[in-house]
Length: 117
Image 1 (tube, rainbow, N blue to C red):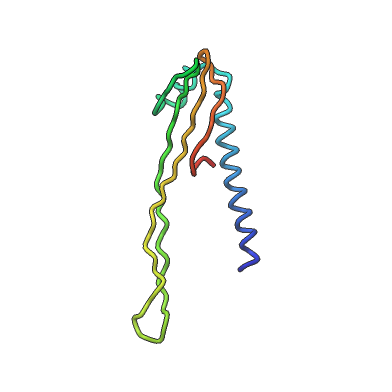
Image 2: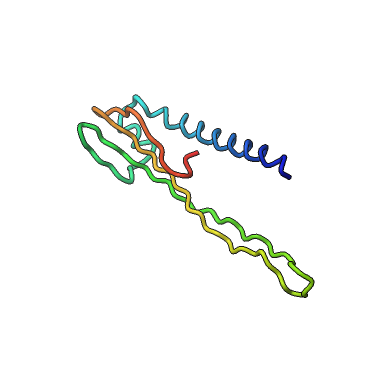
């Protein structure tokens, strides 16, 4: 079991990097293009802010994952005495994508959160 742990971790990291690479490939198509094209494809941003001639458009993605409870196990010879059961947990996953727009053209984007890839 201990030997498989590094392999499992490597597999999970590879899957995450693939997800991040796919997200970045999708978002890269907007860099260098006009702001209306971004809004047409991504929709109206959740927030926007302008300062120093740069407009920032933020898109929020939120979802909830439920981690199932751990199964109970028998911890002793006493009939009916079970332990180890943990309740289900709710984990909130978020990703904020913020685009920087100058002179009506998308210049860059940043990702922030625990579900960006």
